[in-house]
Length: 167
Image 1 (cartoon, rainbow, N blue to C red):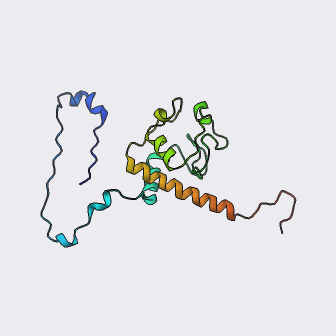
Image 2 (image 1 turned 60 degrees about the horizontal axis):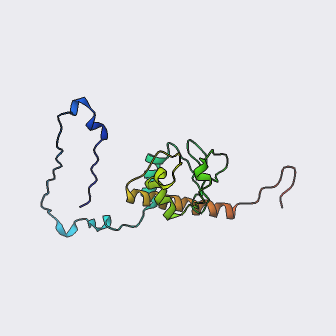
């Protein structure tokens, strides 16, 4: 039964919790009245990355600094899969990232999101996404968005230069 339990690091420095030596996590299990209709929990084991869940994680964990279509505190991430690191227009990347030679794909994004500064010393991104399932879901979302971005670019009507007519 998968469980994530997080303890705020501030617990150790909070004067109100200085006498806390142990934390006990307790569960109560109940007999199922309909075991035949019980939900299969195997979905938590080796689950495929889920772009829908990734979009939710992106919205809550990444969107403060990143958008798909514009630079905020971090660079725009629309179309990131297949793009060279440090190449989004008009964003002031670290020298380390610009010279890294990284091309973003599922493997490079996974390593980066697990710990950017460990992955690439000199990187400036302070955030990491330590949960491997959450990382895979966010990557699935970014892959889906990159595919949509590429499709939109490929099917877009050409833009006529100012002062010219389009046929």
